[in-house]
Image 1 (spheres, rainbow, N blue to C red):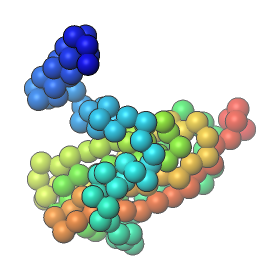
Image 2 (cartoon, rainbow, N blue to C red):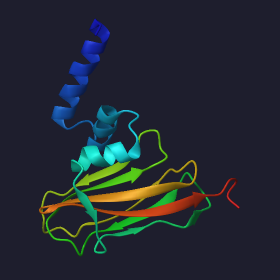
Image 3 (cartoon, rainbow, N blue to C red):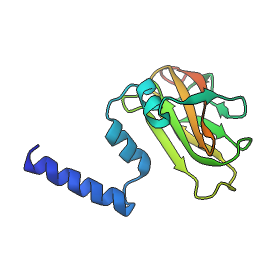
Image 4 (cartoon, rainbow, N blue to C red):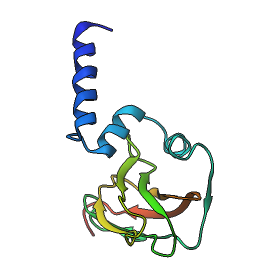
Length: 145
């Protein structure tokens, strides 16, 4: 490691500890160009299960790959601590992470992600009793038609 790399690591660590760097950006930096399944195992420790209580909604076909609507509904689960979104075909698969300060907050998230090609999308919810997942496939049309 050269001096320049060491300085970047120290500054990045200081910013992360101060809360100035979003946690999903830090997670992607630490995971690098990791494959999606490896990222899921890194987040869950390899211990996760599918659940019908977790609802992941993505369009079957997205006409605009730069703004694909995604909804994660974990309101049927109790003790939700975090929600992660994994986009399998992205170079950096962790697309989003939301942490909840209170387990009494309704765990529902709606946002837009960028998809460059057809991909599988996986939502991971960290609850007090473990990790729960749900997956969906989305195709992306070229040119918006």
